[in-house]
Image 1 (cartoon, rainbow, N blue to C red):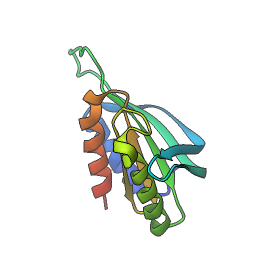
Image 2: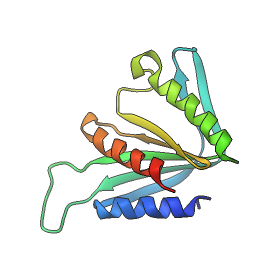
Image 3: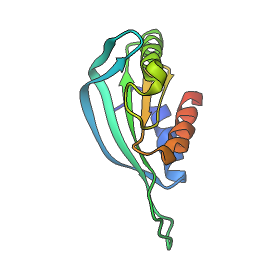
Length: 141
């Protein structure tokens, strides 16, 4: 369960208002990004890593030809200072070498309080969703 329960409760409510559902979740032990500008792997590991698969569902009586989806990883840290430091390193890695060192799909990282939120999607057409929810999470108080 997240330390930041109020924030995550608000996030889930925002998802539900747009017909998005967390379809799968699990804990992870680590995740790695590559910073191509500095030629180093950035590995985040520990017990406070959560992964979520989020997908939009049809409106009642409506059938879409595609269903926007994205992944969210949440990294929990001891305090805001450590979260901000890790956020900056991840953001630098995602932007390294014109932003293609960690895959071509849309990605966005933000932080709020003591957690870092990493949004990713498999399709460029879903970028607007990860950008929207990243901005929402970043603005929660």
